Amino acid sequence: MRLPPAPGADPATPVSPGQSESAGTLQAAVDRILASQAFERTHRLSVLLRYLTDHSTSGDTAGLKEPIIGQRVFGRPADYIASDDNIVRSNVRQLRLKLEEYYSSEGEKDPWRITVPKGSYLLKLEPAVQPLPPTRLVRPWRLPDLIAVPAVLLAVVALVWWLRSIGPQPKDCLLSLLRPGPGQRLLVVGSDANVQMYVRLARRRVTLQEYIGGRYLRSDPLPPGIDRAALSNLLASRSVTETIFLNILPEFARALPSTSLSVLAADSISPRDFDHDNAVLISGPFGNPWVQMFDRDLNFQIEATEEVTSTWIQNRKPIPGEQERYQNYTDASKTIVCYARLAYLPGPRPGSHILLAGGPHHASTQSAGQFLTREDSLDSIRRLLHVHRSEAVPWFEAVVESRTLSVDPISMRIVAIRRVDPANTAETAR
Image 1 (cartoon, rainbow, N blue to C red):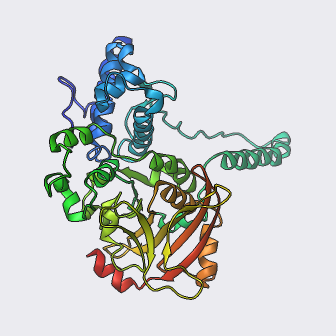
Image 2 (cartoon, rainbow, N blue to C red; image 1 turned 180 degrees about the horizontal axis):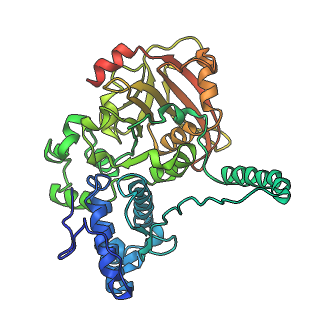
């Protein structure tokens, strides 16, 4: 959804303000951002950016306090405690990532840059840094120049090495299988906290057909005692992205260039988004219904009781050494043992790739997302599938066992794996 530009602002006209015109410059820069494709389907982030803009330009810094933003933008009650509910911080982190995505693509030539500094919600406006034109010295070489050349080259090499060492470098990990090609993006689609709450309250699964367009909220009657209007209002005021998903994103940005990542909410996409780009779908089919578009014919299925009160990973055709059912439990040492499913699959169109990473519970999904960026994750897949490093990794599905303390995995290993027939998955996706 595109938001209308502020009255009187021309998003297409670059501005070079004096001090008194800075507010107008900020408004015009924000209008360009909100009219971009990067923000077209991020309604919640667009509303947040507009709110921060209005209060940054008006000087109303009281309105930029976290509890106030939580109430006015995200519908939290007046007595909510911000330290117990990180909805503002989570969405501001998403906003920072989305602004980086915009300035690395459509907004690359914008004359101004807008940032949300860490520790503050007051927007910062700075002129874009333009590279200086190359200069050329025209003078004869002298002996001191010839002596200095090796030292200068050595210093340059050292500087390049240092910059590379401190900057994020692409990893050879499982996530690198989805490194976008020319003209592609890597879509990162998180779970939907709203549909998860609905599943818990209604005690039934939501199909992908019901999820598209929010039809599940108008379907079967809810259990006695749950008012449909009250539930709709509650869901409308909640963040649609799980905190777990936001914890995984920084690791994704370290594994691949952040400019290639496009973070989308599950309720803001359509089947066409998978036609060309690669995608990572976080969570299982109950928390992210888009998973159902690709997992129907897999051997490892995330299942649940009819009322979705208990969930597990079902192994349809166990082989010796495997379990028929993988279900989370706590061992004698109080360590949580949880299971997640991974699947590397072809997308609906040639050249697109899909990764499913999720499990029956929050801890499972957290572990699945973290496993994707482990430096040994891709080698472990190759080893189990008997694939040499010089060969392409085939389509596969796997079950990952994680042992965790709280939600942080202390060990991970693949306990079951299968190659996937691409003909079956292509037919499912269509």
